[in-house]
Length: 403
Ligand code: NI
Image (cartoon, rainbow, N blue to C red; front, side, top):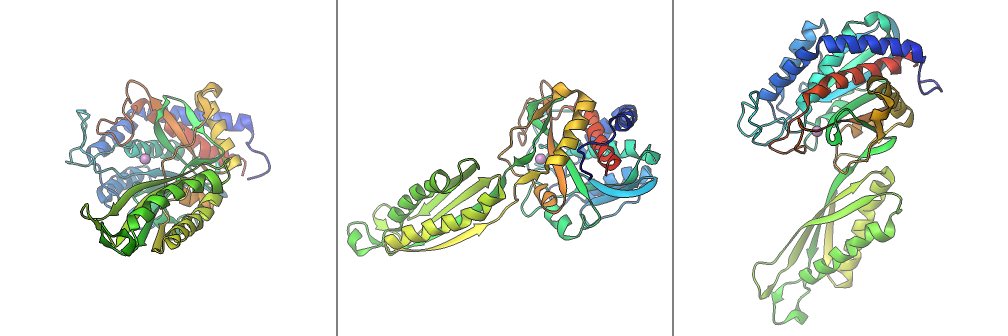
């Protein structure tokens, strides 16, 4: 991308009008696609029928259907002239939740439900693709569509796709999430971190067990664990930059079997959330140092395990401006807000570690979408499908128009 944040405004605006018209023409089709996907949800890493259905839609648009991992679907929309490659990504997996919406097109599979809106994301990207296929002479470069499997689990699909080289020919990438905590038609964009990284840790404390009446003959791992849980609170409050938010939460402590025996061991498990990569760099050592120090001060020993989950989603400043400009054009400047970052995780982070790009929220809160993501009564507001397609297609053309 050149030094300018945005391309020729008039040239882009006329293309956006054409996109909007094409998306509106296919609005009913997008809703039908979404409802089909909603009826046949598939769990992470098992999305074979979903991928097959997506492939059929792409095939009908005249696109060659490819795959990087065998579990995803990828396709290119070629412009009329050579240029850069911009990727658009949708996640396609569902959740192990029993649907309770009572909708006529509710899940036909017991215990599996599109309860995060990924059926909507897939329909939005297919809608964007259909519009872009209608205007190949209007852009240089190409658009890479990535329908990604397994966003909901760790390890997930984005990491597999990146390792399989999905971004090797990509210059920039964009994606969105329908967002229930943001009002309908509001776009939440954010330069820098927008979603948290999520890791986990385990500390095993080894002491010496014995009779509860003779503690002086033991090294009590429960007392050590109690001290350590308190010590762990100082990681965020005393050791990290207060301008960089982080969470260290202990979610499990296991020790002992009965009231009068001091056990040999205690186990602590917890989660870490953060936005800035510097924080993730620092936290494992800080936790381990406290674990070792606290244990040795009591004569106990510790073993520490840190499991890295999805990193934080960090948007590129220039690419975020592209999102904001297109959102203002599609929905109006009053509909674009700076998103409050979410402590939830999202594996879009792996793409943004490789190439510049931006991830954003499309609000849908209202009568049609009253329940939070992952709730058995979660629904999307289908009226947001068309704006979503207009945004993704517009972002791709805006990026290509000035790269
Ligand atoms: Ni989701």
